Length: 361
Image (cartoon, rainbow, N blue to C red):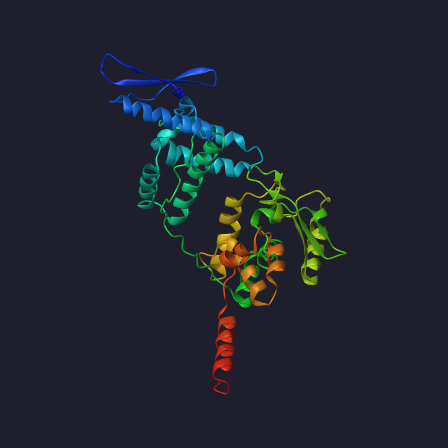
């Protein structure tokens, strides 16, 4: 007995063929017509195969506009930081939605994504292009997980290569000069970055109760957000306790005596006692001090990179360095932040030379 065909085919007055089938309690009409009955039958066979293997997607869902799916994706992660959401919204509004926003999510193919990436590459840095693409890829991954599309078009996309940023490695004399230029209190802020590897927001969010003078430790479990409130660290790895050198603990003690603040109050604030603003602090304190110390162009984040370099160069094991810096992986510690110092490089050259040609040095 011949098996009953999945769906139905009817010939339209125009001479083309239209397919229909019942799924999810509704009569589904094929998204297009076919010139021959054989083509229509082949399409129905494809739909039936998708249904059997659980890969069928309602065509109505694939017609959802990209901008609608992007907004659904933005709302799907309630734990994402406000700054990250603001960054994603900016990327979507400025670089993605003008091109893809009106298109059906299921109509976008890899070639469209590659063309978009290529247009960015001609204008923006490799870092920016990769960041823009990561946002687009996340939207399509959400669409795939939500079964709006069968497969993401973000496949085999060629991205510009990100080159490692060269960060300065300052000498102890240069760090001392910068410390003097910053003056009291602000120089302690600087040493928290250079010595402990703290992020600017982590230092700006320190309160007195996070410094234990007796155990000589500093606890990081919050950071100052852009709106002046305290929030969770950048990641779970960002929550950590760091041992401080004795001289730093003594300087904290002097600052506490000078400021006479309560345990829950911020240690580093403006002259009015309000939370610091990075842009204002950079313009009024950091840039003038760098100029005075002969270090123009130095970024505060460069201190964090120097802390990583000092940890690795001094022989600290990678796991400890990773923990102190609050990195989620040791690869980030080594590949992104740590830089080989000239002294370490010279020693390596001598060691290899002595091993291969002993007595030549």
